[in-house]
Length: 420
Ligand code: LLP
Image 1 (tube, rainbow, N blue to C red):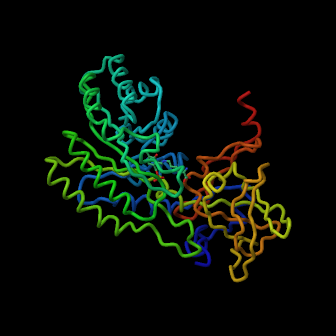
Image 2: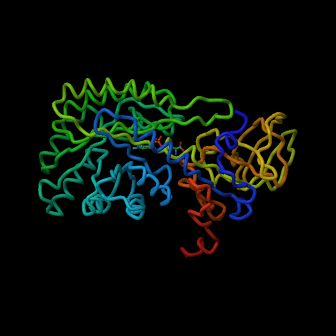
Image 3: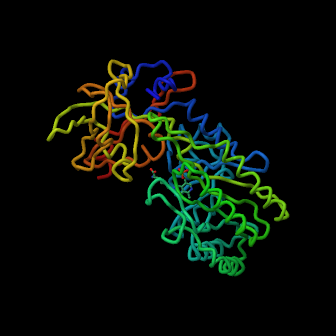
């Protein structure tokens, strides 16, 4: 593909140069149509049985994007009190939020219990703490509801740092400890309403997930009267789209998933609500970052394009060696990829690892160009930092009727000073 920006009409007829001039750079730009399209796709993963997609909001908690998820009818999972508060602010009712925390305090468990948000406990110790919290609050038996996270025993993901299943990860309760879940539940009169798992993040081959579903449904047979079974998220997106990488095979995946559910439902005796927890798939492709090129240079024969998109703005390349396609915009137009030159696109942070794209074949970049970094909607702004005391960027949304709307103002140095 020569240009994703052009083929998707990403800016919906708006001039990216004008957007960059008006809102400044670095700038996250979202496309509402793409966001809605991907959220709709995940809402259709299971159609034969009761199902909800839970958008995993750690990927992106901008309240305006959460409102789109609300309108698209999908539910959400939250990892912290902060994420739950964002969801309330966006208008989500407690019934549409699933709290899947890790190593949380008594206060956080009590917060969720008081708000009526169902929590998944990730270890036997946390389940025990949940039981104690229920006793402290003198909750009636019917309110002592929770889920438990089981470690699926296998994992998958785009980088070992994002694999969450298997013996070498901190997540979930091992299958061999399930009998202890029942002991703790009996002791505190807790009902285990659901079970959840998550194998990891950003896989393109559905097979490991389908294997994990098969395994999880086998494990589910040990639990009586489950109200829901949550298979986790992790569906990948084509980060190499300019090299024609194919999308995650959603339709094929759905076809292969259904018989596994048929088999389970025929044996289990009741039909639980099935859930999945996609984060990246919902939002990644719906955003780009516009960065300004402030300098170019040659160091020992290597060409560098120096932008204002530092690792504080997008940490994924330096944290996971992640690939993000880059398009070059000059005078408001995407520069054609007919003549490519090897260049390294870097940011403005004082670290040599502050690299966005290493030794990349790109149209020759000039000072004043815009570097347009693709697929940044997931784990982009949500992992921003103020490293080097750089305020975090603004975010704008290109609405479905083509308007440009500011959905988060740029942080200021005054904002940084406020904490002192
Ligand atoms: N459910 C649980 C319990 C999770 O831990 C995660 C992601 C998800 C769902 C959503 O996974 P997704 O569908 O987005 O792959 N920062 C990394 C990704 C870390 C994912 C953490 N957990 C990255 O930028 O690739």
